[in-house]
Image 1: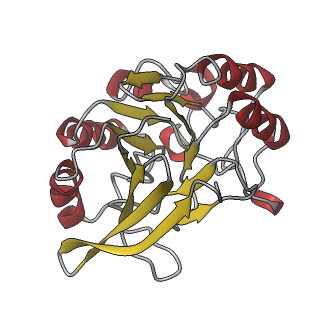
Image 2: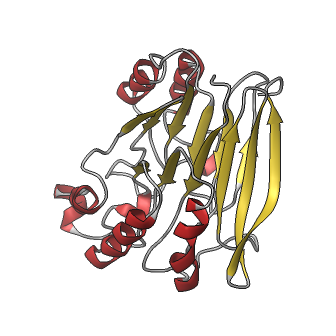
Length: 256
């Protein structure tokens, strides 16, 4: 891993169409002040995948500091429409990114996004064997010393009724590829976990700008700084019309 800190901004679950206008107006400037090497948005950029919502999402993405890596979420597919059957990702490709599984390479960082929302599922996600192989190929083949980052909408560590189909194959691929950082969303509740000592840090971002908050936690996004000795996650919360740092989680390299 590189000696200089690698800074990543992680936003998720924007839900444009059910958003807090003040948070939308101010979040890009808050992200930009930290000069991230990469800004990641892990899905649910819209509320119901309508054209007007994608237009709002595109406007926000254009104000965020680049480069960007954006993936789909379950709300980014039409809900009850013939489009879900015949053209489920057409609007997303038009407004967000024509590539559903983008990769980004910047100095010291190799990142890959996975499309974890097949059109035949309504909420919970799935990762295929082909996608797991792509994790090994792209991130396992990253330059020596690079931070290896994987992003998808559905948290791989979720269990029970929200368990990700293909979870075991994905976790195996993450280990095989030497992934350092796994970013996800979907729950609207920020979280940081290191399930295996010496393994990757799993970060779930809260809902960045929407009114669909949970567990009494308001709008938030996660600022991640990775150094050779530790990974620091600062949760930026929107309270009383301004952004400020809330919980800070530091994971030492020995623990991760």
